[in-house]
Amino acid sequence: MEMPFELVTVEHSNGSLHGLWSHTANSKGVAVHVHGTWGNFYGNALIARTARLYASHGLDFVTVNFPGHDETAIDENIDDFAPALDRWLALVGSSHTPVLLQGHSLGAVKIADAIVSDRLPRSVVGVVMLAPFDVVAFYSRATEGNIEKLHQELERASDDDHGLVPTRLFDSWLISTRAMRNLTTPGGRWDQFPTRNGDPGAALSRTTVPIITLIGGDDFAATPSPPDAVSILTGPQSRSIGSVVPGAPHNFAGRETELVSAIDDWLKTAEIRW
Image (cartoon, rainbow, N blue to C red):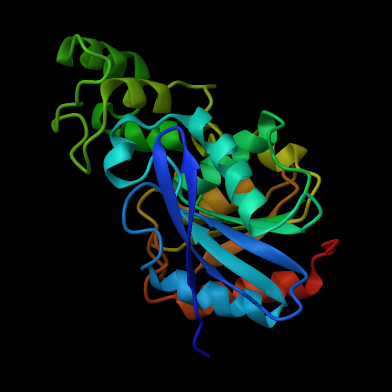
């Protein structure tokens, strides 16, 4: 089934944000995809596959850009997310339109922060967490999880908070020392899934809406490992269900069928109030 998409735009303090919106006849709600850090926000194969899935359940689908994507992710600021989400929801629905949030990678972290800080819109009726990860553990791997040493290295690296982290500390993409310091602060705003401590985080224990957490079996970002991370994030302290998607990498490439099947099963059984 081909999915026609409409190009949509909203204005934000950081500039114009763009998205792709697919409409479904007699829609009962809208699924909103919240992307991670890098890679275009519409081209990942999971976008088209999940769009078709949500259409089969009578939902519109929109994949949208947020501040902190590609080049703007260099100086990521978590406070930018909630206002931008509010703008997108005002465009694609009303305060009464049921919303299913789907967050991938750092997008899942942003949704978790919105839950914890009580910024999650009341229209949200369910959440799909794709590849959530322990941000502190991931970004501090260069110092083997020694946060104090990492922060000392960052202080030595640059006198400017907006200066770039040296590649010897993090060589996957460009990032500012301010962003790196915030991302690696234990108990900070980004530390939403502290699986390094066997803790699912406050968001998954506090949420009052149905939630599913899915992690690829070959996800390089999962701590301590994909099976362990899923076990922690869906354990007794969590209100989420979920599973490992066998053989899937962090972006689920090549395993979209298995991913969609897991979400489909959840949508058929979860008690979501549309």
